[in-house]
Length: 423
Image 1: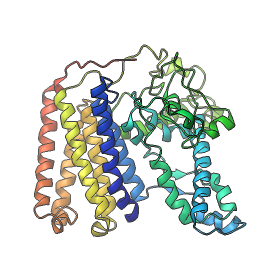
Image 2: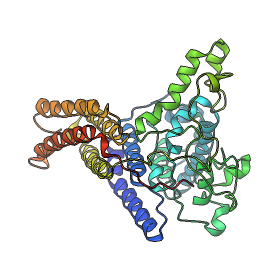
Image 3: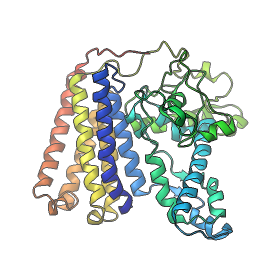
């Protein structure tokens, strides 16, 4: 927990700097591919995902440690070669877990958040799941366990493997020459994120593109078919927590309403998007049928609300940074209470981004929760040991946030039409 949090303290600023550089470059080139509200939503998704991961809010049914102890034929040392082997095995694992997440209805819920942005930029790489509470794919690491790759090697390699998938979420890098034959490139991954019929469910590889070519899921980006991004059942919200559970809720309601018992059971294991017969007519959900003619979400919003949302994301990121850097000071179980506050914060300000009146209720709950924590602990989770008077600043911020949320609600969010170009 503490070690991973420390790593993120250094990694998060790097990601944010690269996102800002990409945005500035897009403005310079006249090709802004990252609208601010979408970027705030993406960064917010990354924040709640990282909190979930640091707190370890998930269960592994069969641990890698256990597999190594039971089936290892050899016991390798943790040297350079072992790390290379571990990396390749994890990439194989990543391909199949990724592919299955696209192909099985209930598994799609944990991955839909990553595809939910209707843009393709570095920020959308941060859209990662918080809805996956059980790790079902450890069995895919059986090859590593058989040859005795140490658990420490796997534990170190997995986050490195994840971080290396950040760079290719961009439209500004076109082709990368002969490396296109070896590595997953921005061009390959644009295909993967596209909803064009030609591109759906292609290019599942994460680092080495060889897996798609080997297992028949490779598709080159075509000049005649510009990729259009998003999901065919659009999220229609900036709230990453809502997005994380939208597909699951649809599955639950469809299973409940299904007349056949067979459908109630099989809906979970059918191909992604499958619904019982006639449900698209009886219980329609919004779906994009013409990928070249649809209105992107968020075409209407207030500039003031946009700037406020950026401010909220920035403050939340500072609060998370303190949490990651001070887990030992905060201690258990208080770190989980802190995590709950972060989740509530993101939920509240992204509800406001969606211009929902209920955002006032969520912000009120957040305010009472935050102020209650300050009164209960006497400060903000020990922050005064490092920054005197910081607790007063946090209390002032909570008051400001409540007042501003009330302002936007009373002024109907000051909506104004902003130009959003649909590809």
